[in-house]
Length: 241
Image (cartoon, rainbow, N blue to C red; front, side, top):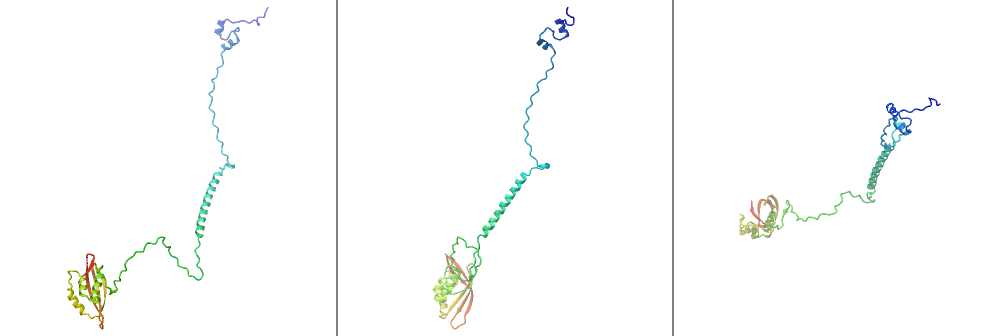
């Protein structure tokens, strides 16, 4: 007779459902399924990989910063100073390279002067201007007021022509006619010379000093004011006072 302890009893499925648990006769897989499984944990979300860290700059001992950038700056500054110094020396030597000519022994050194212009301006041709203080004895002309005064006196003392003197006066002048001028010329001794100083006062008006040198007589001077007039580009004597 089998022992009661070793006898395997089975529970009724209804009892199993009430009490819980899997029947002993059920397969191993079913019992595993009926048993309360352990709470399964949700899979952890995959974290994104961390970016690689940049390598730390190597530090010199005792926490000092690297000296390479400072050395580069100092080297660049030294190169700049050296370049400027070289440029300055080049300018100095290039200027001193052209030595001044040395004067030869026995010749006097010429004084330094400004260099001549490459292009010499053309000389301006002008007619010589008569000295207003000069005493004139020339035959004069009718181009200027002073010129007609000199021509007037030359016709009186050198040409000795009353008609020539009157031709140099304006038509409405207050001077006498040619025959009366000729009478005055004839009263002057032959060989008499003259000299006339003409100084302009205003336009066409001149201060005149007539010097008359008659043979055997001391020279005489006659101050006059002579007014001239321009008629059609020719000058004439208008009045004498």
